[in-house]
Image 1: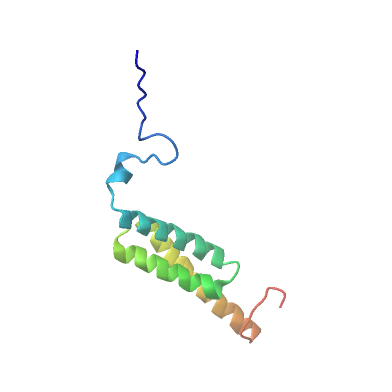
Image 2: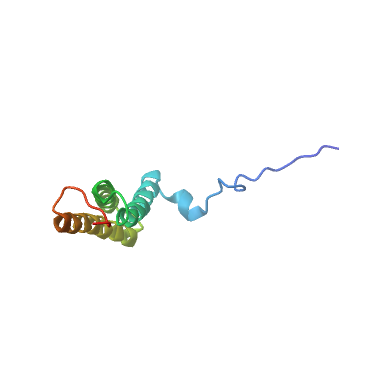
Length: 104
């Protein structure tokens, strides 16, 4: 009597649904860029907007140029990146200095 075990290749945390498996790796990377641009743009409104704003703009632009499936998130990241720089410029002009703080 011989026991045979059939291992499923689609179990565990590495399992991908068929839609994700059929997509090219580059497309998944652009989706990650779109999400990262959104998160960095949102975070940039609070801290380090001089760094995170341009990074969000670049990531969103690359994701849109490469044809991401998450187009809305990339556009939000682009808008938030621009908003980061606008907030920085506004607060810097109110303080009359290169840096800004909420304390005044």
